[in-house]
Image (cartoon, protein in one colour):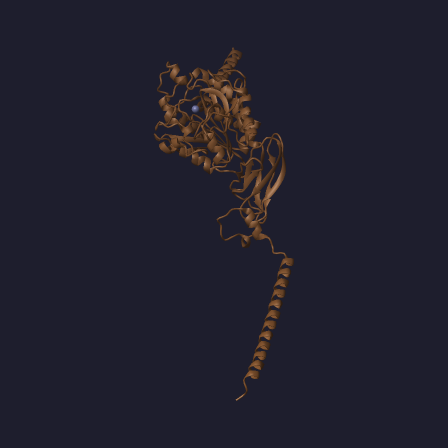
Length: 482
Ligand SMILES: [Zn+2]
């Protein structure tokens, strides 16, 4: 009898334990509106205080908070040498799958760290990861009011796409090719300004933003000068193709060469943004043109607001892609730019890969990251007040090739007082010492010129005197003395 009780007690414990484990999971496979999402993010921050920090980054038009959950072994600060990464979901309020998969992704990272998963622990220790599950919480609240049985509106409609001012946030960023009239007319929206400031003030290296309505990884440029839908390549096209392919090829169906959603068929599951359709004022182009960050735009579901029963499948489909894409932040070329004299890091130095015309700038501690595909590159690092340094560098596959640049200060005496120009060549010309030979030569020329002038003067004076004596003699000959 005792044996039976023991078995019963063991099974009961096992059952309770498994229930407990289920309860421990923070995110379930349901749709989470603003209040539910906010609660989950606070729970993450409370449960994992040593590796998370929840930032209320700013507010939407209807004063909902744009939350960012930061994951790092030292949250709240930029650690020298550690690259920064971000994911932004739910930019269009009715494209909701990314909001859910990003919540699950956060939990998988936090849980992985707690379980001592080697890969995830290494990532969290060496990366500052920031995740904004929803950039358009107002749009989401509107989209969720569409009845669940109105599948047509939920999957392909536009209710909740824009923010509360009826502005499309992915057309609202400053654009490289024109004044972006749409943005000027409606003004940069609160949500845009919050994210723009975040991009401007942090040294992000890699990023992605998520959408719904298709299944493809889309890379810059999104726009063209004449708004025509043609391939609009950056000088980093090879890198962007690799970034997009990493996402699509780790997804079970995105990379398959067949139509995934109605009307779409992208080779290998990737596309240049403008080749698909030209977008003015998009966020990915803003990241690339105005900051160090390389960003792609990923469409993760054909249906924009699918039923809850599909959410687990979407999470499983994107889990590996999300992780593999994040790992790319540790590829390419990275290191520090330092002052040779003080040995301190130089902020704002330009790291320019020749022929790419897309310099990135070093961060506060002189740390820099330049994504590159494996190959040989000529890299020039410059900063006003220093002699530039150029190196030939072999960038390898896998983890980033490390290369530091030590810059020699030019010295204040040689810097022009007129600081209108930042042309280093001018500064270098100022610095050149005057050759000794030139000085001696010029002195000799001056001496010879002086001697010649003197000789000529003496000659003229004596000639004038002689002429005066002659005249006196002539005068005396004509006139007799009184
Ligand atoms: Zn979208």
